[in-house]
Length: 83
Image (cartoon, rainbow, N blue to C red; front, side):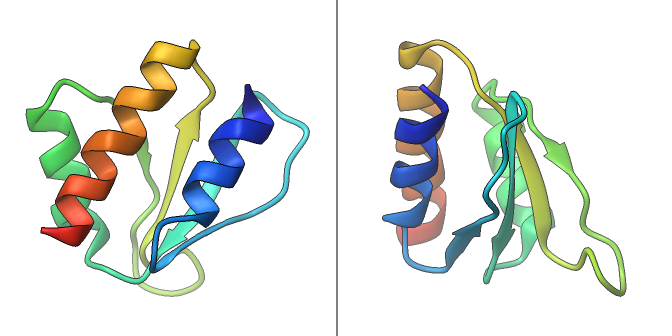
C-alpha cells in the first residue's frame, strides 16, 4: 500500500514525496501547507504538519493507512490543491 500511496502522491502536481521504508510518507507541498492541512482536518483526515520556517517549510507527513483511507486522503488532497 505504501508504494501505491507514494505513486499517487507523485501524480499530484506540486507534491513531492520522499522515499521511505517506514509506515509514513514525508512530502513537500508547493502550496501553503497550513491551508492544505486545515482543509484536510476539516474533512476528517489527520496528517502531521511539519510546516515551519526553514528546512521543513511546506512539509507534511501522512501515515500509510488502508486502501480506502489512502484513497480518501488522495481524493481530498487533490481537491484542495487543484480547486
